[in-house]
Length: 74
Image (cartoon, rainbow, N blue to C red):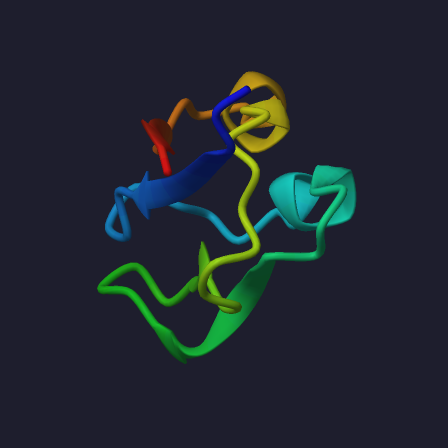
């Protein structure tokens, strides 16, 4: 069985930093950036490389739909 890894892409300018994705990530891959976007919000990003399992929980719970999840087989 092939192992699957994932990665996320966040639309930084549309992210409001609500942290719903952060608390729903089972591998604790996502965190809020210390920097802010043009609207003044701390945005979500993939803080820990190579831990995303591609479950897409973050994308499903995001109220603004700013997260895209990509999966790849290793």
